[in-house]
Length: 244
Image 1 (cartoon, helix red, strand yellow):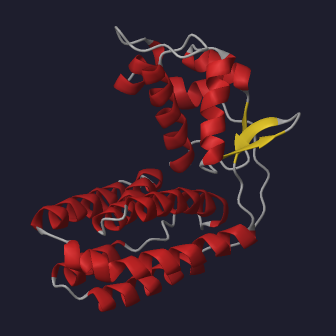
Image 2 (cartoon, one colour):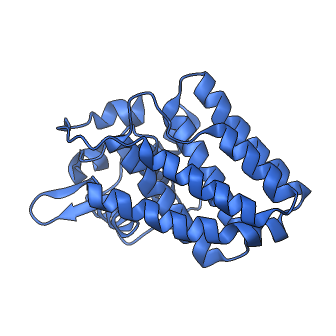
């Protein structure tokens, strides 16, 4: 059992309790566990998320699980359907195009400001995220690589100093991860890591407009890798995903 699973299974001393009898800190840990599983594609788009099964896996009440699923639904990682319950959001082809169009408008627009704000410390952080992504790719861990790529893009947005836009970009990156899970080619990350390295160089040199152009080309290249093919999804083994 890893550290996160150990924390999920135990209540921290002195933790605040929620209305459903579950600690607020535990709710946050469980929320992160489920969102990570979605973003890293261990929970596939379309997979059903039964409240009773999740409650058993994490050892909290169904009321607590319901609150966590509602939070994930607000972030569009989970879809709540009357009489059917929760499932991992499965974006349509139209939504996929809209998400990448939104990323084009927001992320490209942020690049000149990022170029003005970037410093040595932030450049170091960006290089670390890019290196983590490349290491995951070399290991063949594409789920981790996609997560690191999303973290890289979110970090870029935060450097512009607009918290609202950074949060929006983070949610768009989460949705992009779902889109890649549904429509991405098997074994293909979609996000070329050498583009990230070049972006860092341009931003460090204050070449914001060139970084904006590269970001646009980069996002179009990612979208071009998508293959719109519908596939049936099997019910996930929640014990295997969260407790193995």
